[in-house]
Amino acid sequence: MTHKVSRRAILGGLASVMGAPAAFAQSAFAPTTSLRPSARGGDILKTYQPTLSDLIEKAGLPGQISVQVADVTSGLVLESHNPLQSLPPASVAKALTACYALDLLGAGYRFETRVLATAPVTNGRIDGDLILAGGGDPTLDTNGIAEIARRLREEAGVTEVTGRFLVWGGELPSLNGIDADQPYQVGYNPGISGLNLNFNRVHFEWQRAGDGYNVTMDARSGTLRPEVRAARMRVEARNYPVYTYVDGGVYDDWTVARGALGRSGARWLPVRKPERYAAEVFQIIARSNGIVLKNPELLGSLPSGTLPLVTHQSAALGDILQDMLKFSTNITAECIGMTATVARLGRVDSLRASADAMNAWAKDRLGMTSVALVDHSGLGDDSRLSARDMVTALIAARKSLEIKPLLRQHPLRDENRKILEDHPVTVQAKTGTLNFVSGLGGFIDLPDGTELAFAYFSADLPRREALTREQREDPPGGQAYAVASRKLQQRLLGRWGILYNG
Image (cartoon, rainbow, N blue to C red; front, side, top):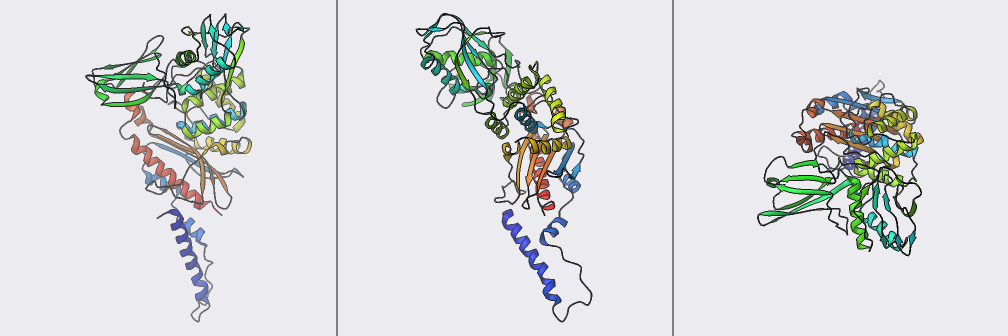
């Protein structure tokens, strides 16, 4: 039975019950003393709502929980549970990063990836160096690289480069990964620089061939599959660990356990050397356009006096933010956050320093008091945020920044996790999930026009801290914790939708 049907049935039934005493009072058996006024159907629904503490106790989640909900218009706090308890926000932190970027960069901002030359193009020839210069774009993909190479030939007229092929990613700090405690193989923890490609992931595919395996590492898109050497894979005769990684100098050196492969399969692996990865793909595709480039060399700084040949722009920041909040891409959050810090301070030296800059901004701009993030994505274990601070930020951002339209609609579900179609309450929010950590923060629109801001964080930190590196990809009990936490979130949303409507 859907919520729509059951709600109407309940309200209809309650309306019938409420009408009965009035009719009965007109009969000969009417009471001689006045009856107390009967509550409306919606009011009775409210009286039957379990308390916030009862819902939390029933959920039985180990660890700590921080919750708060408030009216957006007045700022009045409606109810809370441990609202000052700071917990890891997981990807809910991306909502703050989106606000930071909107304020510092603007929704119309576009990242630029450029091709530069140290000498002019003469009859198709450059007697100098060619430079592929990143601008911090987290969304550049193989199709984008192919478009840059095509324009280099067709628009800039380049057919030959006699000098070096140089690569620069210094617009942002070079990072080996976002969080050092993550498993080596998870694609959501890649390296980051000012030049990124395919969210800095490489596609690893294997197929059994006789007594061994054929393996490929490529930078595929929907139509292109350039194989790369910047990431290398060897199959080794073992069962565990499934993957190992070491820095191979100019390439990423991976091994995989033969016993874990089966007949065939594929997955995306993180790229730790993003500039070399992007440069190799550009070199391959440039060759297919008739432009032969030497092997890439990394630049520490851009030389002066370079000539622009091609400028590739990303989509507008507003669109990138909407995708980031929908798909929760960590690299997007980090690149956008660090780019906003460059706009705020003129430079950025490290991810932690950029997070500190965003924390300071959030206190000044959004009225937060104890926000302590260590990155822009929420992946780091040491980030802390309370429900009260998050609600404060959401209300402030709702009034001054266009954050709400960027948040994904969060459907209400029944106890079996089935979506309640046509529910009169709408929720736009950002989710957050780490092992034994769960979060949700956003806005609730009620049928009577009331708008609420809410935040929910839960964490079983001792259990999380006890995990080994390998366990973090799929820990025992992790899925059960996540499901229980999401059910509690839904019960809270259902409670608030009834309790504060009207």
